[in-house]
Image (tube, rainbow, N blue to C red; front, top):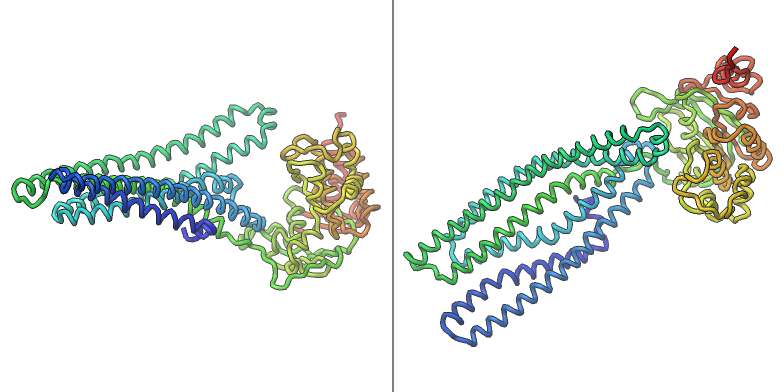
Length: 580
């Protein structure tokens, strides 16, 4: 709760104003029955009109003040709760931006979306209820009970019996429902995951006619959520009957004992009994409101814990105290590196990688699925840290660099790189926000993207739809390569990023690299031999280990894995077998 409330920041003033005005509103309302009693006793019963006018005027003024205080308090409550929600979203989003890949792996994307939508909405509503109702109700309860004690101490003690009963019932309900709501928000994650997966892969769903299957999967997630909500709401339904039982108990006890004190003992006036009824209803209504707050808090506590998990998550990767900002050159050294995605699991993604690459070299990387190719390049730009050994770029351990400076000099193009909504120029300038249009065009020429951009109606100002859905896979990859080139990096990593382009275009891109960026170290991960055979040296990975590291010609002579891949692709084997 403390971590969440820290996000109030500039809305603390609104919160305090709301609490103060709500207190004044309650005081006005509590005094109204007291003034009404005086009006009856000193004005109507005695027929003294000046007292009627005086107390009547006081009642009108107090009622108007109560109305004004309540309306302004409501405005401040809305401002404070909405501001808290806005700050929470910004804080969560900002913290997510600092996460390393290992941090992001702890939270699913649907889970993060649920936290920033459903969970924060719950907290917003709960906070508004807390600063309004949870302030108003206890004050009303305390002041009403105090006024009852002033009128008649013995009658007031009956309220304590009802209060103790309600506290036990509401406390028991809250303990049980809190556990259920923890499960509810986990099911929200499953529901959001189903929706996100279906929408992002809708073309595949329709291509394989799997709409019915997806509907059943979503329906199952929805039904699980429904059952948990029914269970929780069924328990919360006991709040109402318990409250009404307490109300009727208090009314019967006050009526019975009040009549005795009026008729037999003559220790209570009829007007005082009227005031007692007013205070009874105020007291019990405040308890009713408190029970609603308890319900909302029960729901919000689960949300608060989930939000707090993200807010308190600290990045696994940090800049050193005195980071290095300049990368001298594109040389890369892996010094007996071991790496696993879960530290201490004993399952290494890379084992004893000892590799040395000179600045300006073109290195091909090839290997089967799961051989560790992507893991290898992720360590170069420090998206993960090694378990043992070290990775050096420009002769310096990557852990000594400022991460932003390092990643600006080590540019990575992924196989499934992402384009964002906006024009082609806006997407290209992710690589360099200050790039001129001519520089963007030059980068596109090097990536062979200019040939399809020139055919578009608006050229470089053509709008890219969300996720790049209005361009082909090969076009998307070439735009991503151009975007990376605009960084003018010392190391360029292509992680199977030409897999969607034809071999002729792939060859043109490699030729352009040799001509345009000869001093840049280029690491090309590929499945096709043709994409790496022109490299200075080729690294063959097998099960997270270096199997061979040599030229194309030498590997063809001596390495069985490379020979097998070459035979299957070049000499008609594997997928290219022809029937006899």
